[in-house]
Image 1 (cartoon, one colour):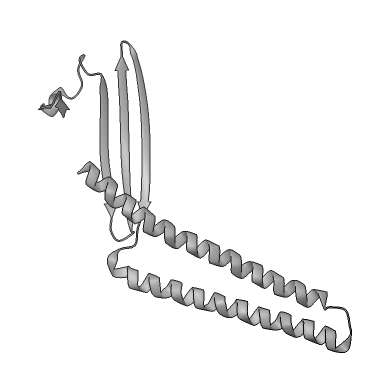
Image 2: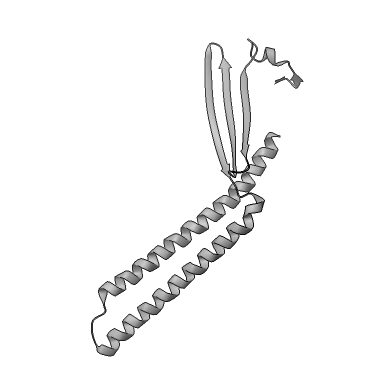
Length: 149
């Protein structure tokens, strides 16, 4: 406990001179890749008390799991690229077949191709967001922990 730059014994934690209180607790779970910062605030003015509780959670990838995660994402992006290429080839084949036989385009086949392309696009966006969020959260967690320490 610090008041006006002077460390006080904890038995004098709160008294009538206390104007505000800030309690920070950092919980670190390396196996789960999670850091949580719990912030408890209290402001005392006369007979009124205002309180706030804020919990911030930061996920990260432990260093020993980064190569596996990067490899998994690389494989995922390779498979997604393959799905896109195969569907574009199918789309090209459907168009060529319709032109060659002078028939209308196979709407069901076209719909399936566009649905697969849509799924691949959504999965790609989700994977990119998940990877960048994990990397950004890791640096934010490191910054918060160093600020608290």
